[in-house]
Image (cartoon, rainbow, N blue to C red; front, side):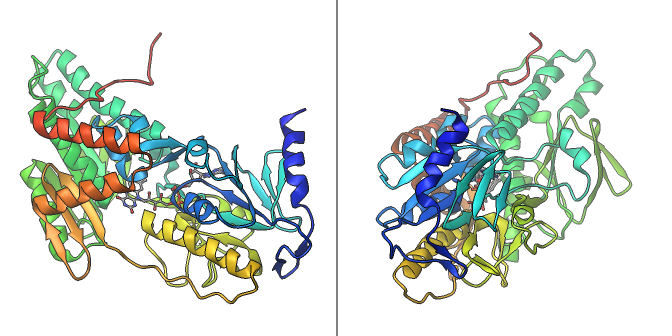
Length: 439
Ligand SMILES: Cc1cc2nc3c(=O)[nH]c(=O)nc-3n(C[C@H](O)[C@H](O)[C@H](O)COP(=O)(O)OP(=O)(O)OC[C@H]3O[C@@H](n4cnc5c(N)ncnc54)[C@H](O)[C@@H]3O)c2cc1C
């Protein structure tokens, strides 16, 4: 039996019993089929919230693991290993009897026949939840990606880690001292949480973790720049916390450039206005674009590709399709954070449950539980609206929250131990240069 025919078989029980106003409840004994594209924060939250419901859930993802993106920058800066922040989707859903996991890259959606396409394969749905997230955007300069990688996937993180660690190795090998200056200049573009966290971690790596390991170079002479086009760092935080973050970075030796839009990137560095900055490593943390879901759904979207949705997160004209998380655009736009995606996933599961029972639903409301960003060792900022914290209290809180939200007991334990080890010894356990071999 081919993979194609297996999928068609899987899809067979889910054909029919749908109406033009959305799928009917299981009146005829038909078990509604909920297809979820994407096992990120939104998709997984929807899937698990449907665990006690009389529906068949199929979760499709192009990767076999759920990725905890908030800690990707720690993989990029050699503090954690990839497996510490990822968990196989099958393992997460193994006890959920009504859930099936499919590995595959969705290429389109046929909204007429209510089918999801994975290349030639078609999977029928009664309800569809699109939770395909976002990727980085280069504001029309996609050619910059090769020289200034963004951070979204594990492969991005290990690529950035390789570039950072190689820069130190190449500087150690350089024949002349003046060659080392550009090699050891790291430019991070974008002053949001990811840029702030990356710049702080690179500075700590250079000035603490690597300091005794080289003979010809002084790693702490590395120059780390954080370049932000806007007037302040962390624009989603209150101004006072932005200023605290800037001061904390400067204490670590990071040069923070504000109001400085990058106008060009190449393999020698970046242009900021008319100023040329020679940099051996450039990292892009400046913009995101949604997945191509709007194209699949022939839906209205904004410039970043986010799909415009109704107050109940359904697609206008398609009550059976929901779009959630980073790939969705509500009338009152919500931040692209994990909490929004998770709450939306749970909410949509509730809408499906209510529809199956013929009950009314309420519009989605995001409950903002607070924002956290870390700068480095014992330095972080936390904004709960009613309470704002800085320094080590915010840092400890940041650590506890991230360990709590990581999926899997093993990952929680390993990350907690890695952090304790790094705190006590100033060292990093994942300093491997991988993914680029001349052999
Ligand atoms: C570096 C970084 C740091 C971050 N830090 C924080 C933070 O500290 N706090 C916070 O709250 N948020 C943070 N975020 C944002 C947060 O991770 C996102 O808002 C959240 O992941 C969005 O969830 P989602 O379900 O919409 O998408 P995602 O979690 O991105 O999941 C999308 C899923 O869809 C799958 N997919 C995509 N396209 C296809 C396709 N064609 N076929 C099949 N599967 C597909 C992907 O493989 C992925 O598993 C960070 C993001 C990044 C990149």
